[in-house]
Length: 374
Image (cartoon, rainbow, N blue to C red; front, side, top):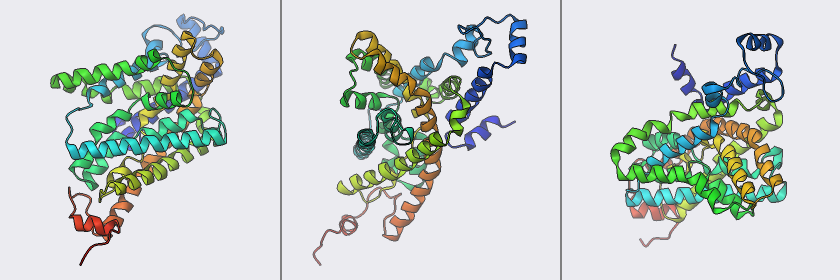
């Protein structure tokens, strides 16, 4: 039936399609249709705490996987992703990766802080929270980056993906919220980062373990996406404010993170700017960040370093932020390749071939507007 091939044709499909499917089933579940209730009663299902019957809350393995399993599956994904973070990176790739991570993070932080100050950090412009902005703008689509740089970039561009793996997961968002005044204890950071750190340690100690865990970069994604969706209402995706916020978030990610990345590459005298434009996307797995942040906030509240009200505010924005980030993922998946193609044509008109590893220094100087003798 080619179901997988069809899903993969959708930008960010492995994340977005199961998430929407889960949201659709949960929306039906929350309607408590009489015929659904009758079937569940006949099958002997138990009632929920609210006295209703829901097919996503029948207990056992089914509920644990499809309804309540998001955080465990996200942790598994982070562990496996950490195992693929190769510490042995060439100097050129290391430099480019560091520039890209720095540019993308500082841009996302600046936009998140700026809009949070101008509007509101929880329910800001078009309902965009600081969590949604930073999560979407700092976490790039590594698969798309690798694909675009392998076609339009050079080997060190593609090699930088090993460093870009650092922005997978909620760490940068959690760190940003700490910088902005949210009181997360050290144990909250450890609780979030431990799976990544252990995966990185094992993957770098044993290449066989790295190869064994590599499928885990992809396999858990549709499962935690479905579980996240199974706690959302499909109506959120048809809310004009949510759609508008997601589209705006996607455009800001492509334009601003790509633009700042280009400036940083120019500042460090890199002739080709294919890499920063290729990284100007939102990863599908970024949609899992709000749930991870809410879990860290719960840890902070239990330790007494964060008020219960503040922790609840992070929990309350999970669904809307997840929807906005999912829409941003779709938006950047369309805008990203278009931007790379346009930049590639622009570079070639200026005599810069992005697939070449090094440009002559005279060409670099000319492109930067540096005066030359003779």
